[in-house]
Image 1 (tube, rainbow, N blue to C red):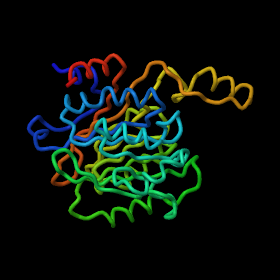
Image 2: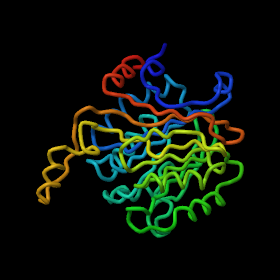
Image 3: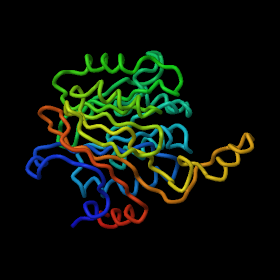
Image 4: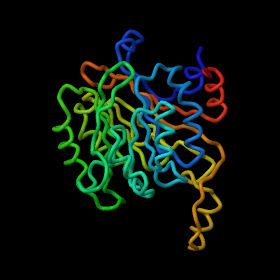
Length: 294
């Protein structure tokens, strides 16, 4: 039995081995936090991609530079490690030098319900390893978040723009409330392949295939140091909370893990066939690196 099948799989799946042979497999990795999160992705992804025959990798990278924002250097590292597309959230513009990347590259998207004048593409189409086209877009929620345009209306507009020939459609819904995320799942059920939530940094256990064939999970969780408060040093967050002092929330370093989901889908219909949570810790990442080192 392989490492991934022995240790890494969590959650539910649908479809037989025969169906898997006809499917496309997407890996989505949630909120990469700081240097620890970036480094474990760089270490584990090439091996995990080969281990599980992943056709396409999508990563939410909005917290990858010291816990807030993303830089051109990190963008290049993630793409070089095998990431096919990067989604972003409310910290997208914390590092202004990412703006030229957002304007020039076709494998990174802004939250689509940000203003039209905001730098970046609202959706993109990338090619999976097997040549299948995959449309990717992200949206920002409105419950307990900064004011933005209606994500539900924007989702409808995006689906009208994506060519009908592109059957595989992936939505990263970057939102705070699980109710908001579940509503988006139902709103898009049967019209997209997957709706996967990010932002809270805490994985949920509600992964499922919705009645219309959309793979759904409220939040895929965080990739980074889990001995922390959402990726930040516990003592710093605790002190600031108790004293109200303006204390910087430094990125933590302990118990680094990858959190994400693997989605199997039918490329002909674009419908989801299975969704599974994954966790990869530091020991498992090192094993993947050693096992598949070229």
